[in-house]
Image (cartoon, rainbow, N blue to C red; front, side, top):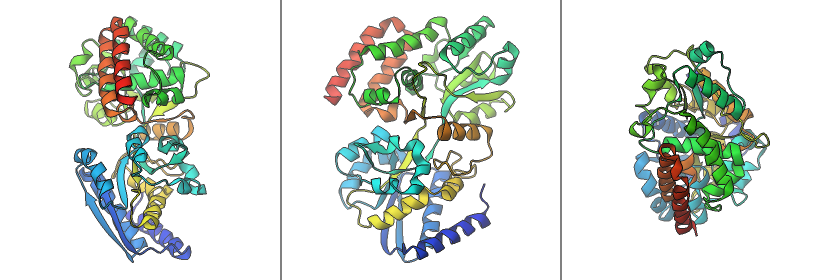
Length: 416
C-alpha cells in the first residue's frame, strides 16, 4: 500500500509532467459522484484534492449523491446543465445513455499507449466500436472453496467441466453438498447462468443475449441450461436455497455442509468473519466447458464518464487519464481505501491472497472478455424477469420450456 509520502511524491511527479506537457488546466470542473458510502467517499474526495493540487488554477466542484438515488437521477443530471464527469457502470448499463447521446465518445483516450494497460475492460467500455468511459475499480467472481475439505477428499482444483462434475460427485459421496447458494434475492442465480453460458457459448454470444439480440429459445441457450442441469440433477446445491439470502447461505460452507460458493470477492470478509481461516479457504477460476471458448469473467466494473454536454471536456479527459494511471489505481484500491482491484495491469495490488489471485486472473487469464454480471449486462426489466426464471429453473428444472417461453415473450416486448 502507498504511504502518504509515496502518494505525495507521485503527485509531485505527475504535477511536473502535467506542467511540462502544457496540460495545466483552468476553469471549472464539475463532478457528480455516487461514491456515497464512507470509504468510497473518502477516496473520491481524495482524488479531487490530489487532482486539484496538480492543477491549482482549476476550480473543482464535487457533488456526492446517494448511490441508489443516483440510479434514478442520472438521466436528468445528464440532460439539464450537465456536469463534466459522472460515475456509472460499464457495458449495457451505460448503453441507454450512449444511445441517447448523453455520454461523450472518449475513444481518443483509449487510443493513447497508456490505455493499453486497461485492455481487460476495453470490451466492457465499448459500444458501436467506440469507448464511452473509463474504469477505476472492479472485483472478481469465482469459486471460493474449502481447501481443507478438498485435501481430505484428495481433490484438486478443476480445470474442466468434467473435472468439476467428478469433484462434485466425490463431495456428494462424502455426505456434503457441492455448493452453497442463496437465491431468495435472485441475483446469485445470475452468476451461475453467466458462467455456464459464457463457458458454453462464449462472451460474444452471452452479450448478444444480454442485448436482446438472441431468442431465449435458441438451441445454444438450451445447451447452457442442459449443462447447468447436470449439477442440479446431481443434487449439487444445498436444499431450499430459495429461502436464503447469500449471507444466510454462508453457514453451510463455514460448517462444512457444502464445500464451495460461486460468489464475488466481497464474500471473503464474511467467510473470515464466520470463522474460516485463509488456510481453509482458496479460490479457483470457473472451469472450461467448451475447449474452444476463451474464458470470460464476471467482474463488475465501476466507471467515470464525460457527459456529452460537458463544459470543460479538456479537464475531464485529463482527470480520466489521472484516475486510470497505475499509481492512482494502486492507491485508491488499497485495503485501506476501496479494498478492490485496480484495472490498470501495471498497478500493485493489496497484499491479500484473494485480491492477488483475482488480479492475476482478470489481468492475464480472461481473454474472452469481462462481463458485468447478469443484472448489469441485461436491461433492468429483462434482468428481473430473467432472474426469476433462473431461480425457478434451479428449483423446478422440468419447467424449462415454460420459463424460456416466458423469457422470450419478455425479450420481444422489451427489446423489439
